[in-house]
Image (cartoon, rainbow, N blue to C red):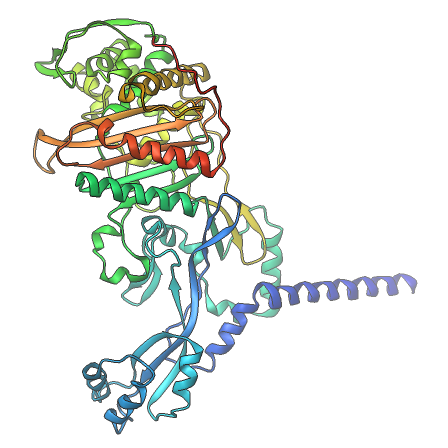
Length: 573
């Protein structure tokens, strides 16, 4: 008898616990959704209303800053078939709403329709005033819409929600990539009580909870804004067609900022050029020029083919497979150290390294850096580089690839490859989202397996030392240093083609720049580029100041401590 009582008591306690947990989900976790759906039962059936998970930036202090949220308000509509005095209705409403008279009268006179919206996204104060008019044929419906507090901030990363025929969904950026997480199904609020409860319990104890939720990104809004302003200034100063930039933590792949100019306002995308909606930082492919020499030199170092003190004889120009290639100035320099290949950005020096490594080995290394493959970044429509020249048996193809011509990479591919030489030789996975907060109350942090070791740690340290020397001794004659900090960097200037036409266009260049700091334990890697600047040839002239501005901002904003005495300058090799 005692056993039965204990058994029944346990059952009662378990049931009470289940009901308590379920009440928590109903009232706290899903409370807003239930209220919203209850409201929908009492509004006009033509109301277009939806709910959706939120997207957040994350400040450097860990604060979640709204990037994409759902707002609630009201829509005013009319039924033309039952409005008897369109002019009178207009006169009454126009005292409260800003309405175009001719447009309103045209809608109110169209007797073929029973529903036509005349105002959206209204607040309760305005709606209360309209209610007092008690106008026959005018309906008020609750409304929800997508709102982007930052306007144009990170617009190419966030994307937006829009209709495709009758389907409302994320169309670009994170809104599209995470559609399965952000989209919420109102019908779920009417699920059977126990079915929904046990579904939530199952998710709660799952190692990989699935379902609806909010996403928190690694994008820092102040850093994003600073990067966007720098790109805007670059285009205004140099008349560039387009400009882009990425700031990434090269150690773990978190993207702190990603920007493209020209951009658009997410709250007014309908009036923007559709060609600005995509994200060329993950979709576009470009010949990156001399920043690729940093990868080439790291391959030479890693294979033992060259050292910083190795030499080659520079003739200024040379002919390979009946094609002539030259240094940027065509000047012969005689016996040259490998360090000077980077400092003076010598095409023949980079070609020498690649050819000494050998076509197959050089191509293998470049592919190990991840070029020609998707990075796995959590943004839609990722492109892949054009690297068919790396498979060529001809010397000319490998020689030009060594200094960033004849092969094209996406910017995000480029950043991943360059991060590898900065972080000790590990291939990372670039990503935007740091965590997902599911509706069931659980949070899942994004994590990625450790990538493969592309180059040895010692090689990473040596190429870093060489790139520090570039900044200390060569960039603007050694005047572009950041006192107290080791900065590794390289510029790139690439000739450009016209789409669909063979050969390069004289005077048309792509400028690129990358750098990381503090160099031996980098917190950030900054990548910048812009397309077809006018009246200027070299990237060192156009991108050095923006890079230094960003570097100083990040050092101050994150209070990064110095890593070397201010009077230390690396000795020229």
